[in-house]
Image 1 (cartoon, rainbow, N blue to C red):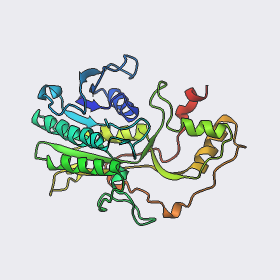
Image 2: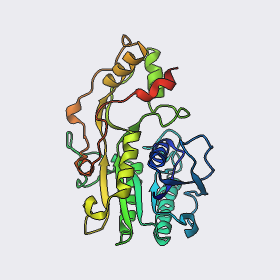
Image 3: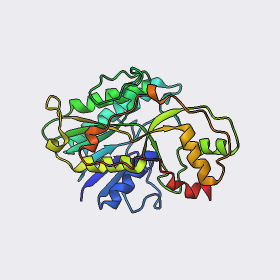
Length: 302
């Protein structure tokens, strides 16, 4: 059993991660502004107060902690790209300076491993059709992507023989982490059900449970198995699964609710899209579902 601290534990992605860790028998310490409701997770978690606004953290925050998973991110509600809203300085202060203070405190407290939830946004605009691999030079074209990349670099700079930093460049994450949290596409599905005209779109996606499985896997493997870059003793992994067109998504949803006759958006051109290569993570034993999974929608439809 490991004792794992998780920031953003009550957020959309954090709930997937925490429940996965709990189901594996680990002790989870939720770091956040307020204690989670007792019924939010599958089992009880320990709570310790934490905020990205606080850059003078005590090492006591990590007493008895083996690892840290940093999934918290301060942004305007419902937005990541563009999540800075009208306060880009505060966006940077919390998500870069606040996160760096968190990482440094964890290292000084003796935490051995940190997993940072980064984003495919660090790649930015690339050549059309180019497959995104971890060694491609990042070119973030949003403040969101810039912040994620800067944080990756700061974390890597802290690496040492007894402190292993790992960054996960995750694509879009979907699914329903609990009955108390709406599905990622709830609004889109409602628009479709009402017969609204929906614009075409294509993108890469990974189910939240599969992302959580990747986090759990990477908490346990040693540096040799992780094939750590000897130059900086850090690791970066792409986390993605399927290339999903809205046409196919809404077709599947229409069949699920018995409304497949409603208007569909046109299919997008998949040849120009930058898919993500996850060979590095798959080689370690990670196996995503490799198909769209809408099974968690039952409670949204009832």
